[in-house]
Amino acid sequence: MANSGFDLTGKVILVTGGNGGIGLGMAEALAQSGADVCIWGRNEEKNQVAEQKLKSYGRRVLALKCDVSDKKQVEKGFDKVLDEMSEIHACFANAGIGILGTPFHEMSIDEWRMIFGINMEGVFFTFQSAVRHMMERGDGGSLVVISSMSSNFGMPRGEHYAAAKAGVVAIIRGLTVEYARYGIRANAILPGWIETDMTADFFKLKRVHERILPRVPQRRWGVPADFGPIAVYFASDASIYHTGDAVVIDGGYSCF
Image (cartoon, rainbow, N blue to C red; front, top):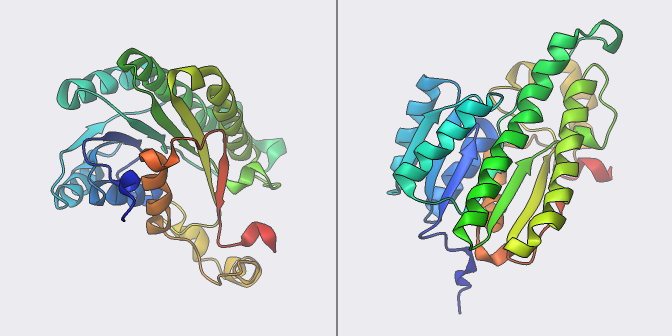
């Protein structure tokens, strides 16, 4: 008998940063598995393109412009989602940016705060609203943050990015303990070297192919579609007892 635990029919799922990259890869898989999907992004044009793509799977789709580093925009975005969709069963805090290349001793406080504003505070604002709603709804829910393998490895000229990505894993562990009594579970996903629009220029560098790719046992870069199955799992009832975890998806890079 087929396991119906992965069927997302009737579930409403929010993906921040869902108009491209890993976020869109997850949103597509969620829609294909029966979920109604809400995506947030700062680029209206990308939002519209992603919205049309997701609607092709026959599900309800809502795309909103939202800067997750702005608490008021996040709260307004949640209100809009609830007005349109009534409830949210799973929330993927995926929105993030990376500015790499500045030596640590030359890094400005403005650059540091910008990274933390989106990659850390954006998760804080998003999950606060999600937790409040899930507690009020009274039927639990799933919180998932997209962290990074940089939280485990040294990242020269990217200390602000790595610190924020490590911090959100700590948030996940705290949420796991604090809100389990409400049926809310929380997990993190740690991507390795993933080829997206945001990383395209980096992956064009010859030295990246020469020094990094040979250390990936699967001998390829990850792609957004690689994160669809884990998103479906964490959004579904199949993961009902899975919480407090940090799941690595890196093609084996961390093992070699």
